[in-house]
Amino acid sequence: MKKNSFVEGAFISTIGIVLCKILGIIYVIPFRAIIGTKGAILYSYAYTIYSVFASLSSTGIPSAMAKTVSEYNTLGYYDAQERAYKIGKQIIVLLGLISFIILFIFAPQISYLIIGDIEGGNTISDITFVIRVISTALLFIPILSISKGYVQGHRMMTVPAIANVIEQLIRVIVIVFGSFLTLKVFNLSITTAVGVATFGATVGAFVAYIYIINKINKNKEILKRNEKPKIEEKKLTNKVLFKRIVKYSLPFILIELIRSIYNTVDVFTVVRGLVGLGYDVYLAENILSIVTTWGSKLNMIILSVTFGLTISIIPNIVRSATLKDYKDVSNKINQTLKIIFFVSLPMTLGIWFLSSSVWTIFYGYDALSVNVFSFFILQTIINSFFYVLVDTTNALNNPKIALSTLLGSFILKAILNIPMMHFMKFIGIEAYYGIIATTMLVQFLSVIYLLYKLKKLYNINYKISLVPIIKIILINGIMILSLMIIRLLIGSFPTTRLYSLLEIIIYSIIGVIIYGLLSFKNNLFNEVFTEQFVNRFTKKFRR
Image 1 (cartoon, one colour):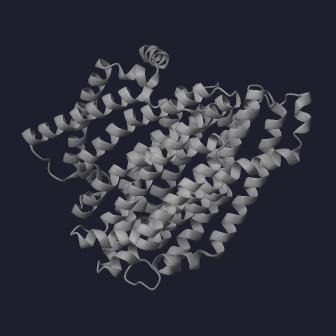
Image 2: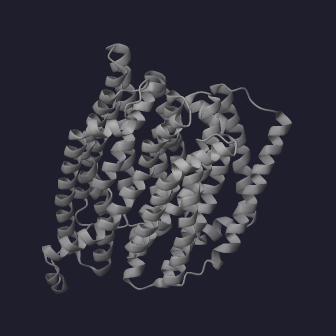
Image 3: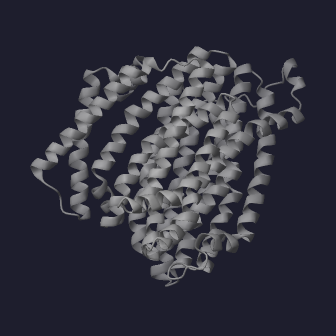
């Protein structure tokens, strides 16, 4: 294992996450074919609720661990970082156990909150069963996550990236083969098949944990796990370390909890809201599954870039802040903004342009789903900035700003969700578009606020990113306009999986060529990723 620079770490983390997300959407094609729409909706219920508890029990402390390890590693306090890791593991195992017990015991009550007395779709007992099955993953996900955070704190991104891929690969294998055997070979119910599929999260987490622990044990010298404590470390007692972990963890936990319950706002308002406006129960459940699960899976391809940046920026920006190098903090934030624009914007516009074909390949053509998804995909560019700026603000020891922004946006989302549905219907637009519009509005306002606060606190000069960002926007405009003209000339493709794949390949190649050539001609690669990284990457590519 070796340490990675900010851009290298972001690159490695992003590749790992992208591979995971690709695996996470490829399995959807056979999985949905096996379990059908009703099973897919049931699966989305389980995962939406599970994600809240998974975030509560596994995200805060690992992020705090990465921050703590990075800080002590920078100061050379190797004994303190090891003791902090042990204490963190004890805390997170307890949190995971408590979360599992709560989710398992109160699954019936949670199921009732989701659908109430509405009949015609999945039953309360169906939802209860799959929630209880997936709750077992909470026994392994937390300990896996904190081990990743420990390694990431050393700015070593390859092992956690591989662990992510292993976890996802095992999970996908269990989902596809488990559901197929359950339903088609043993002729059991759809509910049982979905339960087996959700158990894949547990198996994947367990195997990935074995891998990452093995790597940590084999690299004790590189990680400096057996170093003798320095004199300055003696004041860092276990009690002090415990308090620091809790202090660092609480903001991360609250941030991830609020972030996760964004989807629960939709879970608890969409079906009831749409049915109240006269929509069919089946349609309402379908809309909910698009925005919380199936559309979100496709959006995650783009958001992978953000997650990769977040994983890399936390230990790097903490290191710069620890050394009080605020110029470097400013540079990293600006570089993050440029990378998001450079990578996420063309991906968002590309998938928007090909939304019908993308949806058809993974889920089969459905006019309603395609229309909803073509609007839903546009929120990812705002999501990208929102997520990375919240995490960056918190990593720079401004948890109050990060939490108040996230909480404020969540409250606005909860307040506006149903009124926006009514407003959309009032102006002659389908009510379900109001769900997406609400998210885009509240997160856009949050991004503006966070950019302002970071500038005020750290004197960040956004002007240095202005010219590259304008170039990126103009090049994206040229790319999309060119693709539209080509589509007018050659016409639309039939809505079958084969033709959809052909359309995606043709337009993706053309789009990448146009975007790549214009970016190269305007020196954007060097401006966004730095000349040093580009040269190092091209050398490796030539080899």
